[in-house]
Length: 126
Image (cartoon, rainbow, N blue to C red; front, side, top):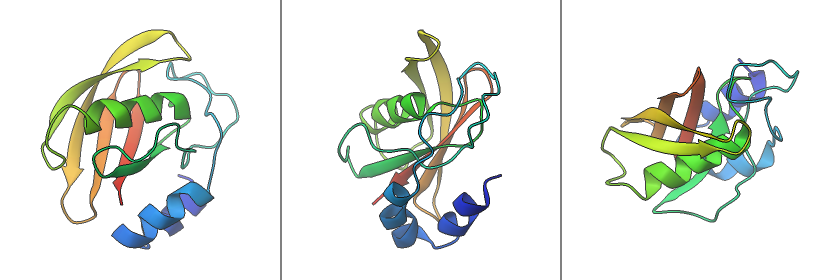
């Protein structure tokens, strides 16, 4: 796991939300699991704040930032912020839509989504 990501997540709810835009990993390799040498990490927001969700991060090198941002959009517009649910998100990298299971963490005001082809996305409220 990326050491910088651990440090920022360890800052807590307010620190993570404010620090998220400072670390930009660019676009991780792909949602298909192909390694591309990019580190997973915080993504540059492609959308403004959506229902309180201000940022996303790609949790591994199987997840692109473009996909992470689409997961953020799908989750934030599909129901209550603190409710676990399935969402579907489109990957511009693979040109496919994937099912993602999103589970809120009530202690840190984050949501972790897993699915697709080994994709991991964390969503941040701020």
